Image (cartoon, rainbow, N blue to C red):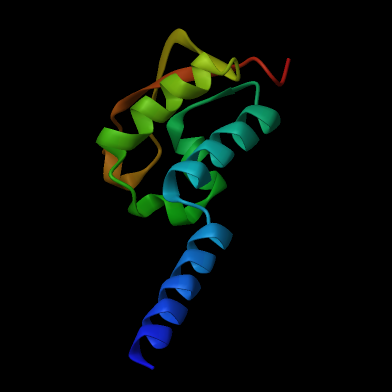
Length: 103
């Protein structure tokens, strides 16, 4: 009886994992939608696209995700920087990305 219960719990957890998106896939979706909407943007705009992404460790996740988006051909880093409008970033200069999807 206990084995069946454990199996049912494991199956339920597996089903939940399949239906919910991982933070990485949510982030990539937010980047893609930002590229669709804006010709130029910063990572601040990406985070505004999905407020749930505020909880991610931005220093270790956001930069590599942007580089991955560039490798996918969604965007390219420009030679310009803009001051962040997020309070947490204290006006730090952030790279302005140019969308290759929204031309």
